[in-house]
Image: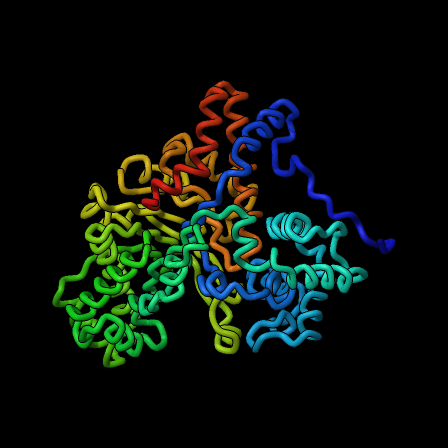
Amino acid sequence: MPADTAPLMPHPDRLLPPDPGIRRLARELYDGVRELPIISPHGHVDARVLLDDELFPNPAELLVTPDHYVTRLLHASGVTLPELGIGGQPLAPDRARAVWHRLCDNWSVFAGTPVRYWLESELSGIFGIIDEPCAANADAIYEQIADRLQQPEFRPRALFARFGISVLATTDDPVDDLSAHAALAADPTFEARVLPTFRPDRYLDPARPGWAAAQDGLGRAADLDTGDYQGYLAALENRRRYFVEHGAVSADHGHIDPRTDPLSTAEASRIYRSALAGSVTAAEADAFRRNMLLEMARMSCDDGLVMTVHPGALRDYESGLAARFGPDRGHDIPVATEYTRAIRPLLERYGNHPNLHLVLFTLDETVWSRELAPLAGFFPSVYLGVPWWFLDAPDAIRRFRAAVTETAGFTRTSGFIDDTRAFCSIPARHDMARRLDCGYLAGLVAEHRVGEDEARRIAHDLVAENPRRVFKL
């Protein structure tokens, strides 16, 4: 071991409460759920990775390049996106090694972040790394991981089974033929469920580049004429049914705001024609998008797809980088979010509909206790999406439980959402959530607010029952 290298030894009690008595109970609760299967009802791993089951190419393209949690903080530390392998073709061996060096050289920037927790868990738990990464051992760690990636037990399907994943939802374009999902479902050697998720954002927002051309593609996929508003609605309904037939349980919506203001059919039709002609105004595009979020709720009442809403990100914030490297490169920035008035038209129409499950997420934690918990504590259709994205971090998760439990309890929450493109981080993220929830429950037991047996049941339900019930699994 080089002199400047520290051991990589994640503590067995990490994230558990510091008080010895409460920590002892939290450890017992955690031991009861740590090995339960992972249910991942919202994520971004490509189903074809599991279908093809090919060797992962190298450590950099597995652990660094696809994980915008990792790349954004490295970019903030002065590492350019090209230096991280973003925006180009598959990495040549020397370039992949150079990307890995950028991570190891800047290991200290992740101190105190959940990214450090995830990376430590991945490196030690999956690949057996015993030294903390640094400039001195970057090559040695790279070679150890690269060697393991050539072994059969480190192929995608083998790792999937090792991780204990029973359900994995992907995120898919409405025009996708879902052939990878169909092939996995038909494969008798693959027993887990890999479910598509209907993600229609680019078809609902006329302000998006290429929106008019996208409607042509939607029409071809549905074999319907999208030249007018009614045909457009019919095509969306058609593709939703297609997704349901291929195992989908949810539709996912990630707009800048969650407003659901209705338009008359005549006005929606007029704006739709303007949008196809390229003459829609920004205000009209916003109005149409908000009306379509309401229409998505109507369709969910009809076809049963769970409706997840996660607003509040100003996406691709640095327009120059977005133009050069494409979307989802780590510079989506949260904005303040208002829910109570925004979602009211939807809830007044459909909030008590027995077929609607509406899972509300936020990047603005100020709405947890003020808006989301009261909504979930009244409407039978509304569930609280647990902290995700910028908030899927230890202190934020603790704040979430403290903010919402007194109003909405535990049964109105979704179960943990990993929301990741980084395949190997899935078990680390779920492990983090299980530790934190068990720590919170142990505190309630210590205060005699719930009993030990009830805490065990709740800990189990948060992992195994809530996601199945909320996402109709």
